[in-house]
Image (cartoon, rainbow, N blue to C red; front, side, top):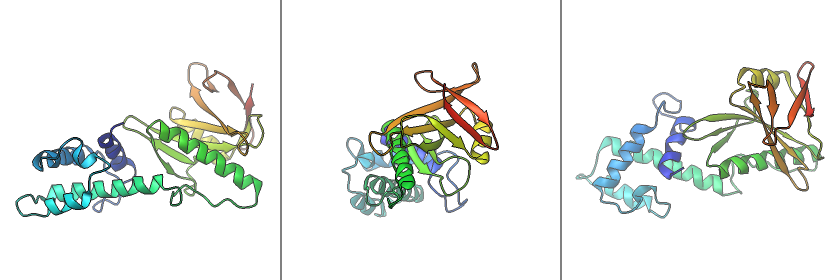
Length: 227
């Protein structure tokens, strides 16, 4: 995705509007506003979207009476927050999804699994946010300009794929089958390997890219393992 496309997705998934307290329904107007600002300020190349552009100097230009426009200001303010968000995401010492590793192996496994999954989807140009503390039935949400995926992450210290879903997780996996992904990381503490299982309605199975199936044993939640 281009920076403008990532900005649009961010506006629609993460940005919080002062008016509604929620992300925007569509970020198109903001992107159009920044494109117009680039043109009116005669900025070369990618202009505001260029990572090397000094936004402080752009702010000085916007604040000049001959350039000032209320929409330019609000759109630019949102983009400044977007730039800060990306800088923070890329700084591992500040990453919001980076959790403190402690002495317990289980926590280390979970951390490794989440980080492996985040890295995978960010490399595919998704914006990833944590839902781990929200008890929604999945751990992460990965969004681009086409879709939002619900990612349930399971970390395993060994190589055998056998996981358990809580009642809430299992319910949500059935409710949102088309966009729910089971992200299983094996050998999480040595050589992490990510397998992503998706639901296929034609076969009524959860399978990975190699077409290996998850066999479901329904309990209160569910236990799953590869066939």
